[in-house]
Length: 498
Ligand code: NAD
Image 1 (cartoon, helix red, strand yellow):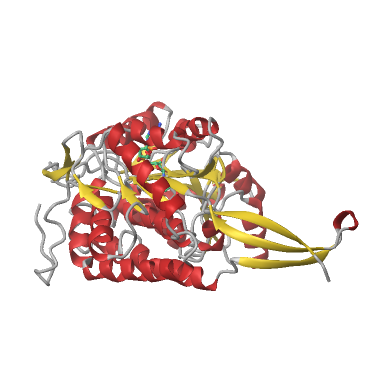
Image 2 (cartoon, helix red, strand yellow; image 1 turned 180 degrees about the vertical axis):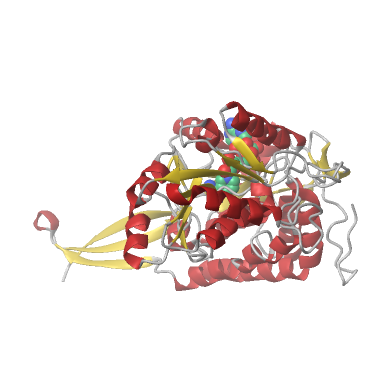
């Protein structure tokens, strides 16, 4: 695939099949693998197929860059590099947009926000944080065991970060790791998902060709081989694994990392609840729930996929959600009105269709959707689907589907809504719609999740920590809390002589 930016001298996407290792763009030792457009099923090009030896070289480069350069100590230089990277990426925004839509199947409207432009702009937040952060803190004088001592806290980078990412929001997740990890002074080996190698490879190319980020500080290793992620998790030269993906893989990463006791930071799956209180506009709230579960074909870990409504208003809620869902634009992600593009792969569509079948087997009713959209013979599309008639113990209500599927469940009173919301192994996010502030507050405090949106409020931004309770993860991404995941704390105690 060859794309040209408005300024044709700034050709970016003429060679996407390279790895970035030790500052050099190199071919994969395993050759290349196909990149498929999920909206058309066409092979749109090739990405570099890295081997274990390539991953070894990338880890080695990251280790050397951390141990032998002053990257981790030169705060001002890092802030400059992050702004330089942000500017360079912005100069390629249209090319990156085209690649993101083609590779991810991301609806174009999302590329103005969390699928591209937002995460790139967020790099400035990390640059500002480097400059404003209290790297050295005075803990004051004390006399522990009778010895007068001046104490200082030094905040330092953890070391080599292995960043392992999924395919659903590749830029958002890649930059939510690269931004704070680099700002904190770490070096990074980024291993993106096999379905979306280009989004990461292009960032590697921009870093190599258009920034002063030193060789080895960022390495990008694309591959179809999941074992390369496992290699990062076990290698003793890697100090921290920052992982986003499924809960099952998160478990494997944590177990693998335990051998070398490296820090592990996990952003995992979700099955979040959208709670509609009985004092609110049920129709508007249910319509909103139906719309939001369809965004990017439901491929968002934090989307609210269980709609909890007052039992006495169940039928009204089902009708409103179904009507809202029927109005969602499905299809070609390049079209500005599309909300629900394709799923990422045939495998993922098969998985989602398996859950639609299961919904009926479990005694549920498909109110709307339930199959492939008419007129879309190519592409991994599934209709936005509303499932009614199940209870929260069903597998469809318990398991993460990662497709545009909403399960509508009745509850009896606010505390029952909280109980059902919490009756899940996950605890990532959620939504509450209501009018009485005291009742809303009661629900907000009762639901055990890392983020909650109230009446349409948006929790996503660079300075707002995001992450999960329970099996949705460990740690927080974004914000100061996200930055500090990538830092160690050193306490220095000086004998006080005066
Ligand atoms: P996945 O777990 O299959 O893969 C994620 C990454 O892990 C990929 O890069 C993959 O190659 C790598 N990997 C696979 N096996 C590995 C192993 N044994 N060791 C190390 N790395 C390994 O997830 P996916 O299918 O790419 O993405 C979808 C999942 O991601 C969903 O469950 C979704 O909820 C989750 N997700 C979570 C968040 C969040 O922030 N909580 C955000 C986006 C996606």
